[in-house]
Image (tube, rainbow, N blue to C red; front, side, top):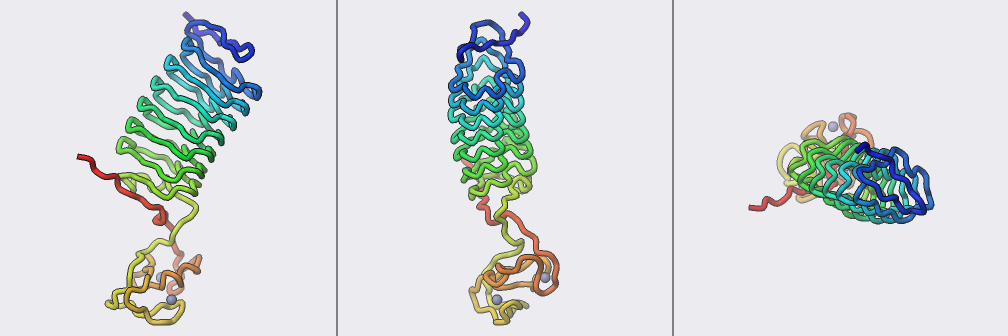
Length: 267
Ligand SMILES: [Zn+2]
Ligand SMILES: [Zn+2]
């Protein structure tokens, strides 16, 4: 049977078989609050609930195998949504700007998380990425300021730029492949590139060229990337923003303040 478009009357769906939501079916219907999608529905179209700011609860049955792009775009009131394990991807912008979402469970049927899928979901504090996911696209969790930690499972082989950019609350990342994912974590709070170490009283380094005092054993010193003797008290270099006080080469910044942890190997 050819898929038909579902109709909605007083938030009740007509029962019909093999239905597909046409694109933008409920675009901007701010009065919608709770939606129970019947199990006759097999797909949710692009932008279906785009701008339904009053929508709080959505129950999606596992007859649904695809959820379209931007389906819940800026549903700011959305607090509860269950993604069924019949869905294999979270598409681009699906939950973009859903600021009311605090928790999302991505089922282990999902293999990819699309571009900007959860961009601006500032209320999200807990996300579990299952080890079925192989790709996380650019900006997928951009600006999710409520996230404090994230586990990147080993199944993830590609992760886009800025996927976790602007996640200013993120302090712990669990991954086994930091270098694969480094561009994903360009967090705004960054640290100067260099080796932060304790002065051991040996070698060519003796004096801090910012405060002009000799280093003492166990002082915290930062050796910049530019040259192995361009070392300063960590507290002195902290105030310097742009370039090395000795050679004037620009100071690079990295995400090393982020606590990157390698996942324990479970045998
Ligand atoms: Zn100093
Ligand atoms: Zn230098």
